[in-house]
Length: 258
Image (tube, rainbow, N blue to C red; front, side, top):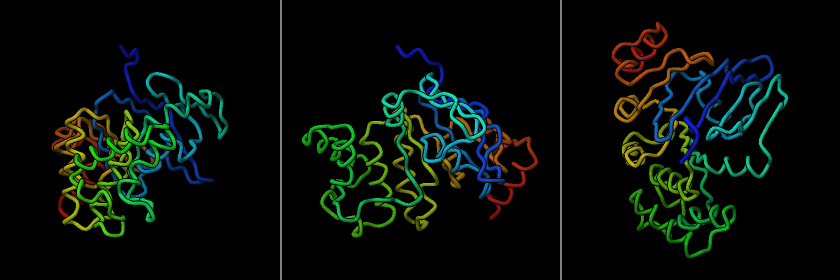
């Protein structure tokens, strides 16, 4: 039995780029199996927050906990405390990430793209990695593309492969950074469907998105960020139908009337 209440937690997380303060005192607790959609205007700090969770960005100060363990504590741009390297690596592998751009290796087939990290990082045997990769391709509706190269796929198909690749590492948490924003409108639905299926299977997900319909339908909680601050959070019904914060109201009005 897991002895933690929250699978992911951040306390007083701040991030500066020089004089520019991008995140200010972000506090968030995520339960296992929860789907959280983070919305807000460009430049709100949403992507930076996501990237700070899996250490693609170094926070300036604050604490990050994963599965109840203090993963990282920094103050004034200096690390105060962190887990031992091996433990940190282990917890980092529990966070899969899908970016706006698909970042597939062009010289590898779809199947090899998905198998690469399980073989190299998790040291899985080839047969097991292949079996998992084919199952994941089936899940994202692309099993017939296993031996194609990425340049033969549409953007939406590439993004679905990127999701399968992240899932091949068997993470406990999936981070999605605007996964549909680089896609043509007609390709968005296929990617969102894969994400909806993942949510139904109980995957813990943090999703930075402009897809309000998806957030309304799938999120357990919606967080509105602006100016590096969490301005409002609540159920989709609370945030979309009865926003309390003036910035949230203005943002939703501009988005929904666009």
